[in-house]
Length: 167
Image 1 (tube, rainbow, N blue to C red):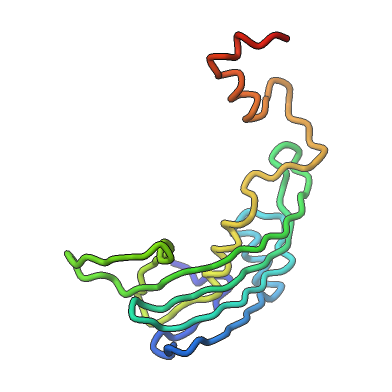
Image 2: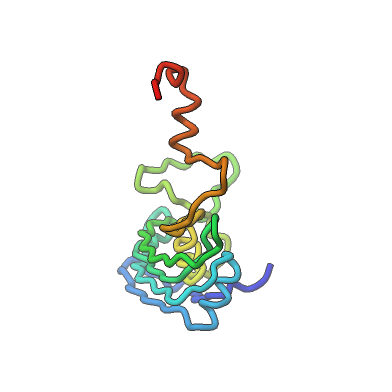
């Protein structure tokens, strides 16, 4: 596995019960590498503010990730700007012993195994941003090719009541 393009490692054993505020910013070369990885035309900015603290269940990472850039319209391939803000609430928990039951609350829906002593906040930020960016962007003036209809039009046409509608 190759090294992440935007890596900001933090040692898990150094994280205490007192909240630690961490702010990270991607450098231009890191932004360019992430844009290539995610298939975007450009990533102009990526910043993240996290609060990291240890608790009984593992290490909790919460915060906000912001990014700006552009990607290609799925219809015209014209650049479409994006500005995304994503909240992060992640629990990094030690791998459960085989057969051991683990009870999670609703706040623990985003749980990932803590497989080493390194927490990569840069990779957490990159993945959160990628999830927050529209996967199928459309330019406002993009016209679909002839015969292509919207999801809403397809849903209405598939309705058993479509034959009742008068034109």
